[in-house]
Length: 122
Image (cartoon, rainbow, N blue to C red; front, side):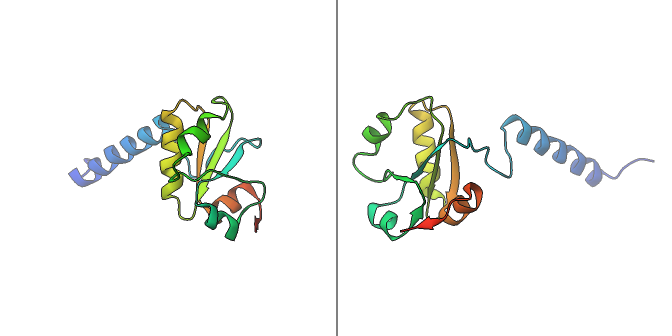
């Protein structure tokens, strides 16, 4: 029995999406090293209002972000988060471009808390 054109297109698109997700390492849950340094990339004021227990604050929009990350070992494991995920994405990209090899974007603070199991503290 011959499939209608729409059905064939759906099968092809599904295959392409599956191949792309496998090729790019796309997963629904970040692959987090349990020894990763957790970095909150929000402002110091946001950090003081509440952050993940044990997190380090390096403001991605601060004037010293580049020099702050340059002081970190490039072969270390890092996980970054912010309020909603946008700044964490920018920080992860900047770190990867700077030569870091193991950076995970945890997204926003609530998702980061859930993924890491760390409490939000003040």
